[in-house]
Length: 611
Image (tube, rainbow, N blue to C red):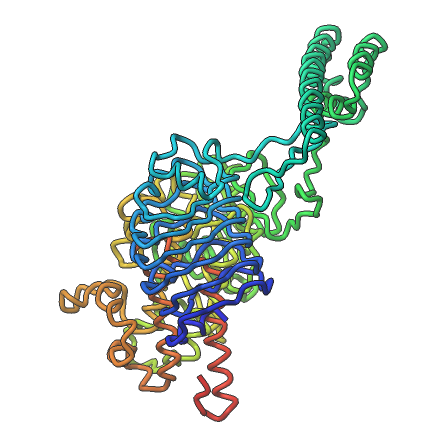
């Protein structure tokens, strides 16, 4: 649904509330909408960047969902917005500075989230209604907001939730009469209220005494029973019990009040006896699937399901690593084609970095990579660690890399990538990155996405190489400057020297642009204004007429113009300068899946364009 909504340019009121749609909010929404209501749908993730471009938006309601993470600084262009409701979600972090640009804002509902920091950015807004309760705001309330908060019946003190009433007491009555003031019921009500206050006071004293008693019990036990390490371990399997004297002390506390003793005993027992840890269960009790777990920085040698080769065998298979067997070189190592006696042909990557000096560290890294299993990720076959040499052995793909296919110098080979093949390659690579970012645990950042690392099999299916290898180099983020200079690196990676999942998304967008145009990301042989592919092509991605001027001439017009346009839209999302506005790879995959489905539909309908 998300990719199609952007075409609804005439829609001004878009309301899909109370449908329990689930998943993430559609990443592309009607661009000219004035009222947007997405409440009560069970949406997860964050707010999509496309909202920041809705300059006509006046009403935005995303309340009662499961939206998480921080609010992006995306409100700078929303000067017409007068009502914002993001209550009852799980949003965190500070309020964005761009809130100050909401010059038409009248009503803001932020209650029941986990926001932190101060609320100074709201001080100068022309607000009539403001709800902040049940958050974690700190700092003083600006004078201009105190009257608004009181008028809105919002809390004017701490924004955290009110503490629960003491055990054994009745919660205070919050019902209001017709005029908004607490309802009154005569003298009986006054007496009941007084009695309730007295009982709460007594209960509070009893709990305080009981808590002090529990602490005292803890230190008495610790002093009397200094356990050996073996005895401490037994606490995981043996229940904790109090001796008779201590039990009497606890009973005295119990008899002094009508408060249930269970509330006092439970914290004491939990403090002294933590629950045993089950390493094969998640916190919600579900069994963790080991297939997608990619542990990092282990200190033990894990079991590997790959073959260990001898260095001598690899020397023979590569003719002592001669230039004739050399396939390519990168900052991590050199890649060779290896022919074995049994007729098998494999790829050998000889690691240049001296970083994994400890063979055990290298083997742990190999173990991690060997657990990566995805149809679009190159499969590790084996490894070698001898004579301070570290090598990795992978499957061999006869069609070489995507870079070879797009920029081949050999004019005798007239094989060209069709538009459908390019869509398939983009989708497969996107799925590989989605797997690394969102399926592997912990998440893996590739840090070296480029067409040379996308290998093609005989059916032109893509296989992403070098996954999990970035950590081989100690100064990998500095070593990846080459990736930035070659046109693939994200702007923030060039500035900070650090790569993130969002940096991978940018690099993938450059690869898509490479597929689209047939040009290299940086080509010094072209005119200066066209040397950087992103700078040259990005301004033209939303102009349908211009698209046909930048598309690869080798396609010879054999494509759907609408398919080109939608492909260009995905590119524009990925190569945005601000990393927070780039979509996650799961959204990119969804968009490309729809593109491929449309292409297949058109083929089945004998070339009739059904887009």
